[in-house]
Length: 362
Image (cartoon, rainbow, N blue to C red; front, side, top):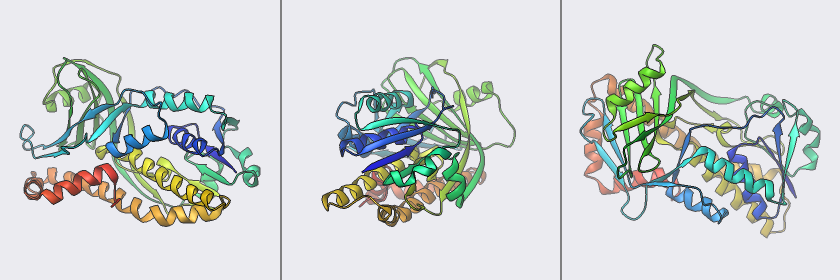
């Protein structure tokens, strides 16, 4: 049995690791013009998902900084904590530098005998005639032949918002609490990377364009904890919500951000993908254990197990964004009573923490 993964991205590199563990042959097909992906981006990985990554590759030894709590603030009371998410038994999430985890799984894939890298043309059309060669083709990129031919029906929303990401260097401090401030011009997150570095994600929804210097000024205004020494390189990207209406065509399965893209305020984009990987892995194991071939029925089974959960989860994140966006427009009259209710209800607090860690799994 063999599988083709379209795109040399982090999603496919993790998938390749999972399949190689099952001794399945994997081709990673990628565009000849693909450039080395150097970025200052970070990934927030939930505790449950971080344990899973270590399970599929016991040699995973990259720096992963734990956050024990997440504190929530709003515009009106930016120095008064509204709520605190925590789990006394484990870290809420781990922050990893994107380049570190990408390079780790890339190097693993290059050395693994079950994984092969296959260069292709710009739109990967030359993969098309090989469909019968593969039991399964997984497409996790948005600009290729398969995308344009099969996967163009989407539920989508443009937030008309831009995310600015960077790492700040600051004086050494005990840095194990993440901070989320819901400002009038968009959510601003401070995510600990180490005792002297913190990742900042600012999702700007203002009407006029802002410069990098203005971004730095906003960060200084809402900075509650850090004595900043240096601002790192600022990267930016447009924010959009999208979910594919169909999860498969023939033996082709869309995956990763291409399958579902959500707002970064909750840091759940890649966490959703890891949960999908777990389910896909389980379904493949079931077929292997029964002595069955991987065929189109796998895609149907995957859709039946994940589509409704992904839709509910992604819609919930969108609701959180819309809720705080509205709340800031009406002088924060919603968020304070809302969090007051949650504070007094341990079961709601527990559910919110579970939701962020494991999604909708029971």
